[in-house]
Image (cartoon, rainbow, N blue to C red; front, top):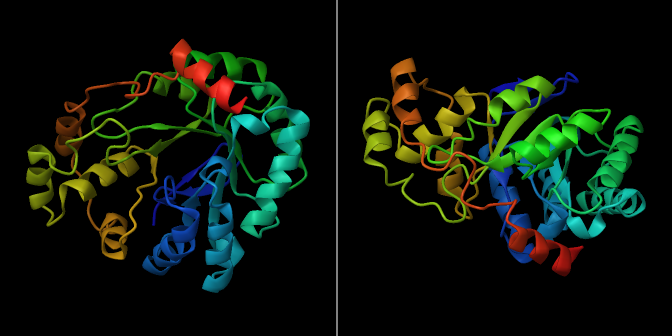
Length: 281
C-alpha cells in the first residue's frame, strides 16, 4: 500500500473501498470481503445508511483499529453546529469506534460553516483525526476555504481518467488539500473506462487490466481512489495495482482522455441545489 500525508501529518492510504449504494444488508459482507483482500480504508457516509455494517465488519475482522482508516460524511440534513455534533457522535456509535480517521461535509449547501465548527471541535477533542469536504467544486471550495480556520484536508470529488479535475488542483494546492476520487472507474453518467482500448493497451505491457491502469493513474497522481465492487474477485483485482508503475509517457497519454474536467454532475445547478435543500435540508 502507498500513502499520502495530509497537512496535519496524518497518513492516508491511496486506495480504499467505497460502500456507496451498498445496501445495509450487504454492507457487512462486502466490507468483510474487502478487509480480507487487504483494504484498510473504508469510505462510508451517514446518507448511505450502512455505517453499522462497516462497524460490524471491522469489529469482527480482528484487525486492530489503528490499522484501519475509516471515512464518513455529515449529510445535509445534519448540517449546523448542534445537529452535526450529534450526528458525529451517532456515526461513532454506528461505526463502533472512538474516533473517525476522516470526516467530510457531504454536500456544499446548508449551514456548512456551522457543521465545520462542530467538526473542528470534534477534531480538537480527538473524535476525528482529519476533516474535509466532498463535492465542493472550485468556486465553492475557494469561498469556503477562505473563511474557515482549519483548511479542508481532503476534498472528495468525482475523478477518473475521463473526469480529471485538473482545474481545481491549483486551488487545492494553495490550501494543502488532497483529492479523493469517488467514481474512480466511472461513477454516475460515465462509461468507457473499463472498456478503454487505450487503457487496455497500456495495461498489456504490465499484464494489467484497463481498470487497474485507471486506478494506478490516480494513485500515482497522489489522488486517493475508492472503487466499489460487491464481488471479492473484482475487489482483489482493484487492489492489485502497486506492483507496477506507469511511465511518464503512459501518464501523459492517459491525460489526453479527459472529457469533463469538473464531473458529470453539476453541483452548482440551482435545480440540483433546490432538490437537496427541499428534500434533505
